[in-house]
Every structure is written in C-alpha cells, then in structure tokens.
Image (cartoon, rainbow, N blue to C red; front, side, top):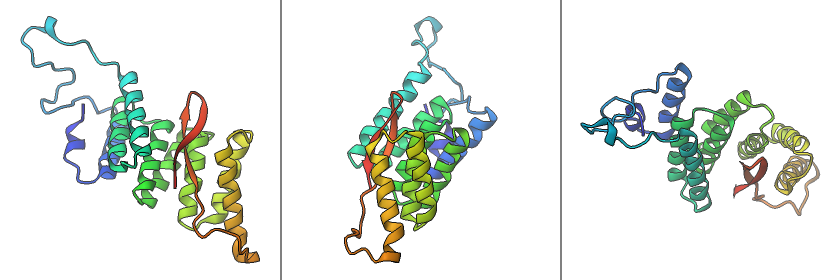
Length: 206
C-alpha cells in the first residue's frame, strides 16, 4: 500500500525523497486513505486477510520493475521500485534499481544522487558502482567513471563481462580525444546491472 505522501506527489523522484525521509525517521506507518496500517474494513477481525509478507512483496516489486525496465517501461519500472522501497525500506539493491530507472528517464542528476546514496549504504555493491559509472559517462565525467568501473571490476574479480566491457569503453572514450582514435564509436553501448542471487546480471543497455 502507498502512503498518502506518495500519492500526492507530482514527480516520482519527489515522492521517493519523501518516502526516504519518512523511512529514515520510522514514520511510514499510516498507509492508505484511512491512515491505519493493516485496516481491513471488515467488522469481524477474524475475517481479515492474513498480513502481507513485506519482504516477499518488496522482492516482487523489484522483479516487476526489472521486467518493466527490460520492456522499456521506465516510468512504470520506477513506480514498482518505489513500491519496493516503501515496503522493504531503503537498501543498496532498491536504490541501485531506482537510480537505473532515473538514468533511463534521463534524470542524470537524480540518478547520480540515488546511486551515491546506495554506495553510502553498501560501498562494495557492484551493480551500484557499475551503474554510477554509466551515469558519470553520460555526464561526460570520463575520468571518475573509469575509476568507478575499475573498482567494480576489481570487486567482481573480473567475472562479469558487462563490467569489463563498460570499463573498456570508458577507457576508449577517455583516450579518444588524446589519440584521436578513428575507430572509437560515437555512441558506445553501456550496460546497466542488477543483483540476482549474489551475481551481477544485465538489467538493460544504454
């Protein structure tokens, strides 16, 4: 269920900031139009449905968001990720997903801020590092992007081809103005990652 503070917001990111603020204070407890958590609307409490499994719902929200991202439905994916955040709370996995959706929606400043927040929570979270590197590349911050990709590559022990390719593209883009590489593609394709059973897998391409 969504809190009123989410429903009334005009922009997804504004809504997210409000949720993050409330979650940080432990105030997200009165959800729905009635303001009561778990209110069934039934006169007999015995007929009330069983309580929802918040962790399962949050995982469902992430999975739904991932499928929507793959389908190119970035606004809907962002809403699914925000639902996961409201149900599960703020963690590096959820924030990395939200930042990726913001990136696809070309909200680069918001994406960078959210991904950096994910890394504050979990500094070695490889998908967030990789996706932050992609955001930095999109902003023309090639030097920092290269360092971020190198960090992700080292933490991943070079096991993920997508990170290796992103690092290669970042190095090529960084060196192209110096050496004038004629083979450097104008629009390199970077890959966003997500976490799946302890492994980094491709979320989508940029």
